[in-house]
Image (cartoon, rainbow, N blue to C red):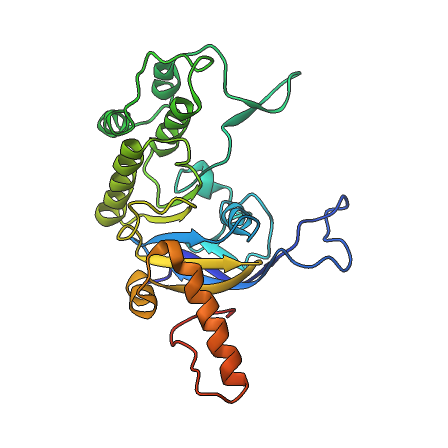
Length: 276
């Protein structure tokens, strides 16, 4: 069976005003490769500016790349718009914004409307799924969006993004405004989605509490390059570290690689994929 998400030799530079990469500009993402199958949950790790959000946006079809570099459900993420319009591919990240005529581009969702009207205004939704999400996220349907806190607004955003069943879900720091209980309930729900429906999830986050056994795979990006892409079990076997210290494993790999090049006995851990 083909992977649900496949990245092959992905290289990307933000285009200039003419739509093309500026001459001589270094790539933000360079020669990244990894793939995920149905039912797998991947933590996408890396420091600020490493390229995590860019990779998720490319997977979400928000940036154009060669179709051979990125395939989601066997199709081009950018060129096949039916991926997102059908709900098979869902992206949740950043501030919740919309375009408003005569008011500007990407205005915060803060109009005077109830959470109930927003959530129940989505057509074609399974009522049982909607009710479960409202309960999991502890949403008060009477909330007015112009008075809601950042955390309350985020809960409504997540609920609306998950109302329809997805096959691939991309999450970019989406839980930063949630409290511990809401975050735990959401992660448990998402794990169930993968195990029962075979969904694939990529989750970029800096908050590792409660995630030690949540992912099936770890992908670590640094300076736009793939440093590590392994099943969680392999990471634990190699590092004997928590996710909080995953970067130390990469540094150890580099050290051993340098020793090997110098002819010492240092060996590179097996199974690490860097580049393709």
